[in-house]
Length: 190
Ligand SMILES: [Cu+2]
Image (cartoon, rainbow, N blue to C red):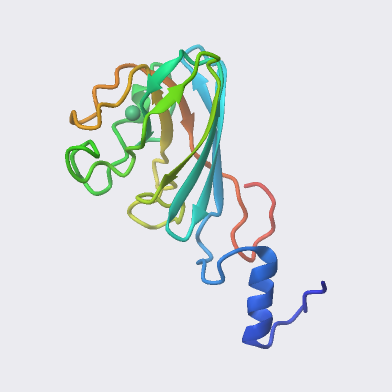
């Protein structure tokens, strides 16, 4: 299918949007995708994460290996800095200034369900977080001035203890980096 170079009609614009499989109304400043590599405290890579903007939140695709079997808390933390033991990543991403825990109240935007790692230590899972965005300039943007990070903890999040779910040490961390093209821009990496 040939896409016309100049789009004079709404029909052609809709056709182009469909061809690119992207929402027609996505603002130009929105990053479409971001990613990170999770590393443990020794610097070893233990996982890869792709984040994709959708109309209603961010889809997070996570793949980890070499983790201790069992339940591990998984959060967005407020600062894009991962220096072991990862206190550098700051507290949970919490632009709404809420208390922690989905079983307690509104919870932090960075609160997410625990990861259940099987005996193999490997897990691939998708998590949807409707409270965050990759769109720059929004209060709940992961791509804000100080960035943000994904963190995995040694223990499970109890979903209620403020401020961090009693999840223990931070065992893996990755700085979230913009990876996708914006609408109308070239797909080159930034
Ligand atoms: Cu955390």
